[in-house]
Amino acid sequence: MHHRAATRFFPGTTAHHRDPCTATFRHHKWPSAVAVELRAVQASCRVKLLLAPDKFKGSLSAAAVSEALSIGWKSVLPDTEFAFAPIADGGEGFCDALAKALDGQWIRVDSVDALGRPAECRYVWIAATRTAVIEMSEASGLSRLLESERDPRKTHTLGTGILIRDAILLGAKNILIGLGGSATTDGGIGMAAALGYRFLCAKTGEALEAIPANFPKIGAIDHSDVYPLPNIIAACDVQNPLLGERGTAAVFAPQKGADEHAVRFLEGGLTHLAKIVERDLGCDFRETPGAGAAGGMGYGLLSFCKATLQPGFDLVAKAVGLHELIAEADLILTGEGSLDSQTLHGKGPAGLAAMARAAGKPVIAFAGSIEESPALLERFDAAVPIIDRPVSLENAMRDAAPFLQRAAARTARLVARPIPL
Image (cartoon, rainbow, N blue to C red; front, top):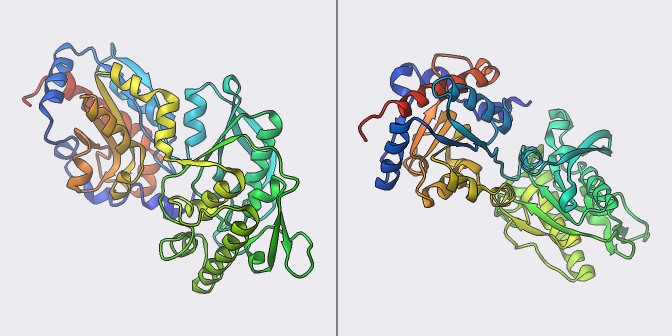
């Protein structure tokens, strides 16, 4: 776990909750229909509860968050009827959410990391629909590299391509790929090489190693021996194009170790690649929203695999039947490590809240920290910061489960005892 990732999820915990008695439950303006429904729930104390949280990154998986919330809630309202639908966007937790929802099994594969070193990886196989679910970060993620090893001129997506190839050989009719957490800015050429594409040197005609350092040398793309490709859908939660000020090199490569010189090199290399792809493959996706996702992996999947891009939350929501589960629930609990401005940009809790609001169902969000943003908090009927005492970041992350249990219990008491709305 990298410290930078961790700090985003429990910032300022020591200062934010000095009075847990008053900070625990943030009640906002409830639409009248929701208020009426919650009064009925409160009066009966027999709640049909849907638990649909995202992960608390670096601390708890979505399934573990659900378990902690259910334990706390049942300590107050033991007769509650629960339904579980851990959610995710296209990043970490994508496979886990779909595996649990669709009775998937884990397939282990000998692959490579973003520097080409051997790495044991896994993906989810859903036998009923012959669908494979892959997280790009599993093989090609930053989490496999030391900070000193990060260099997007060298890192590549070959390992993710090996996972895709294994799923094809297993007989996959559909492949779902979560884009997020990558260590790469290779435009998907490493992935393409694993599927049979060859990137030929302009001078020698020989196949090049499919890494960004070789972008300027590419003279042609040989696609005469590519594996037959199934239907591929990429879960993508950013709208960035491949190139330009909002492109993958300018926006994301610095997070992966690129300095200014490397950013310029990658921008030029990806521009060159796009021209060769347009000439040899007859397609041009450089301006497509999402092409810049995961170091240009969105562009690579569109160009080399004829994939489609979908918002990760929408894909997961459809797969788990979230609309139906919301319709059957009296009350919905969601949450993630931090409710902040990023929550509004494709994150699961915000998407869930919109669906719940449309169905007239109240939704309560739990988080380690909550940004004071009217636009954010208006999405939820209530937001509950889970930290109930002064605590360090390290301890907040380590003890997230008991914090969640106690927060759920406090919230259940409010539901159990009708209060003026």
